[in-house]
Image 1: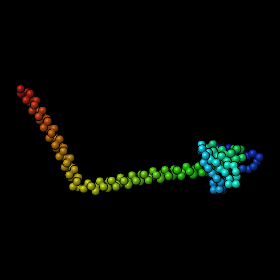
Image 2 (image 1 turned 135 degrees about the horizontal axis):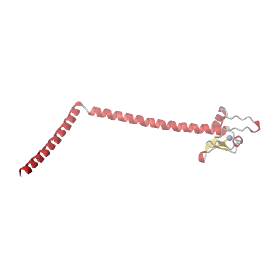
Image 3 (image 1 turned 60 degrees about the vertical axis):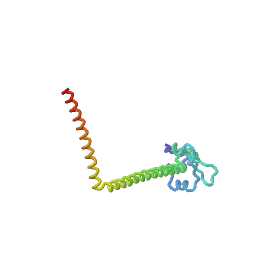
Image 4 (image 1 turned 180 degrees about the vertical axis):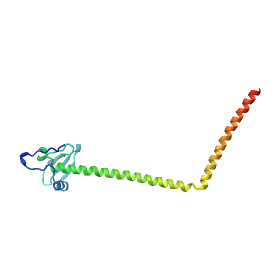
Length: 157
Ligand SMILES: [Zn+2]
């Protein structure tokens, strides 16, 4: 997109804007974000601003209208890319921060749990569980026994 370069009148405009020209636009031009992903780029000594659409690869300056990748378009593309990577970096840092927090929280919880579970506690827990198992078992036996008794009674009637 917008990579096709025309050279009207043999002006010798570079296909790729030199880095220093891009930097000059970024540092001294007035750059504003407009609606629809477009940008306004104005030279400090110029009245009129050029409108750049980095997605479409267009600029309203003379070179841009002629289909060239002008300094304005190049500068805006650099700016958009910088913003994108900044947003990405912030998002990644946030994700890393959350993962780290969760990890720290889990470690703390595990540590707390381990400190609570002293050998005495583990034995108490095992005893509680086994006595409950015994209780259930004896209840089952009792019910079965009662049923066996009943069916024996029924047989004897
Ligand atoms: Zn331009």
